[in-house]
Length: 92
Image (tube, rainbow, N blue to C red; front, side, top):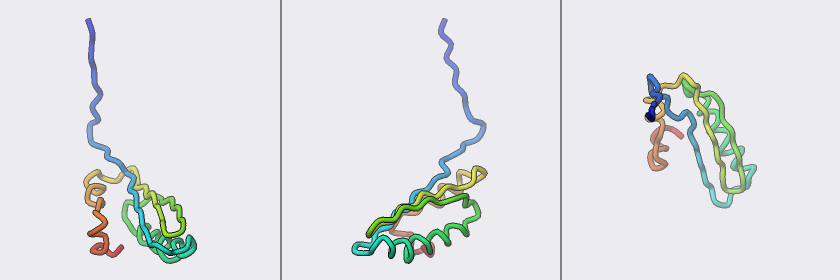
């Protein structure tokens, strides 16, 4: 007799990591760091559920991995997923 069991989490956990990608064709890596990544990092730190950010910059490109606190409700993460076309509306 085969027994199949499954474990269900009592509440959804959700993914607590967001990716932010920015592009500025022609910018140096230093310009990306100073004029794009650092100001954006400061704004992200203002988020209630902010935990940490890891940033990589290259000429014309900045890539950020933003990690939210483990206690962040899944509904908050879903609200933060903003398409790039709407990002300027949120002050980023």
